[in-house]
Amino acid sequence: MKPSGWVIWAERLARWAVAGIFLAAAVPKILNPSGFAADISHYAMLPDGLVNPLAVILPWIEAVMGLALLSGFSAEGGIALANLMLVAFLAAMGQAWFRGLDINCGCFGHSGARGEILLSILRDFGFLAVALAALSLRHRRNKTGQFPA
Amino acid sequence: MRRSFLQMAALVAVGSLVGLTYNALAPNGLPLRGGTAARLAQEGARMMSLQEVRYYLQQPGTVIVDARSSEEFELGHIPHALNVPADNFAPYYAKVAPELQKAKLIIVYCSGGSCGTSEELAKELIAKGYSDNRVAVFHDGLPGWMRANLPIERGTYKP
Image 1 (cartoon, rainbow over the protein chains, first blue to last red):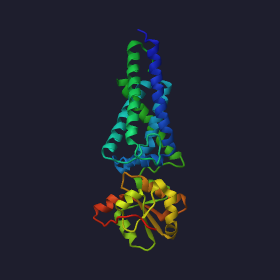
Image 2 (cartoon, rainbow over the protein chains, first blue to last red):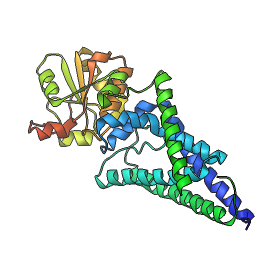
Image 3 (cartoon, each protein chain N blue to C red):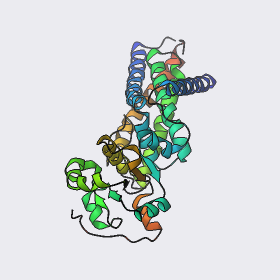
Image 4 (tube, rainbow over the protein chains, first blue to last red):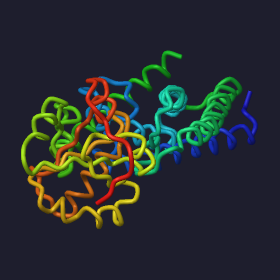
């Protein structure tokens, strides 16, 4: 059965929206790895030795995933990875909020601003809703019609 | 399902590889080893332990600076600390600049590992021209000081 036009377009739009979010998040972190490493260390949840390597690779994983979602190449894995990453980010911010840490989320690059973690959590729930919609629509599109992943 | 996992693994592998390669070639690439101390050293500051802070505070020419807000400073700070909130740098810096300019070593601190204000302040000071070896970050901050049962002072800073 051929997937209906609205499913194809809704999936595409949701996927592109997620791609845009991750690409916008990746660029400032790639340009300022030191600031991003500082942001990660302020979460106080990783051994110090892992902070710099994570600050180096995480933005590029976001960028590569964003490009995959934008182009449609490896989109299925890209959508799944985006959902996993958003859940991981929410967990990190949730523990910071629970512990009362007055930090900047570092989601879209380094800034000196603090006290915004709760807003960042709410925003990430919105992003997760879009990513889950993309995942669901992709699944529906896969079930109703074959197309290359 | 299997295809999703393979694609996810491939995206993570490619992203990691590109990231490591870019970092190796970029002029502002991060040191992969050495954690916070290596990162601060790259920015021109050094990280200090409590023992080092206690030692240097005994030496002439050492100044300690609290990077937290004036309200937090009033509630308690390391004895003889100056207060230069990183969030409101310029006016507070102007008040203490003569003392900082005379200092051989400036140690900055805030509320410990999860606060970034001491690093922000260190960067501001380095940008003001305080040479590399003159600025140090006491990473454990006030919580580390208090855990060692060392005395704290209360009240506002009076230049």
